[in-house]
Image (cartoon, rainbow, N blue to C red; front, side, top):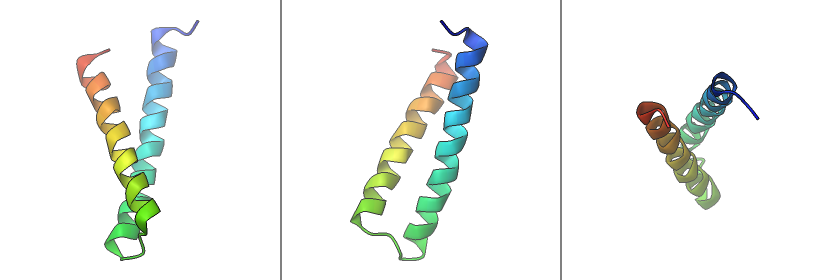
Length: 60
């Protein structure tokens, strides 16, 4: 079983990767290179980041 610090580190790493992916997808959207799949992924990544931020804020 993982301790709290390990879980927090994994969560922070995942959030960082999602933020990087969000920038990539937003760039595609901004340049007009986004297709329907890109827009769907963009929305999904945004949803995941909101969940990570809520967990981080609430300390769950």
